[in-house]
Length: 140
Image (cartoon, rainbow, N blue to C red; front, side):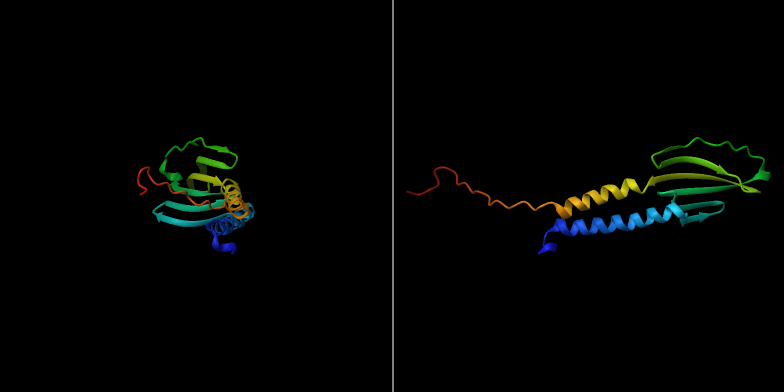
């Protein structure tokens, strides 16, 4: 009876998805996780989970002996949303990191709210539709 309504099924699915993402959120507060999506030459693209955010990062390595002048490109961060570029200077190679990060809370809270709506809202009672016959069609 409980799972006969599509809202209950959708509520359970969204709640499970929110729990999986919340696990990733808590994990990202203590450690940085990256999955390599593409690697070619000195360029690497990642799916990253770090500092409470989930997103895409791209790293490009530059050799310090090439004589290129690198300047930091501004980036912005607001409530966990991050967008921009930074240079990370290791000893012999400079890495330019481009990133687009979304905080986990901006995904988990709406999913939890949606699942609560699906699970706790009462289904509407169905009202039978009234059928009207056009005037003058009845035989007398």
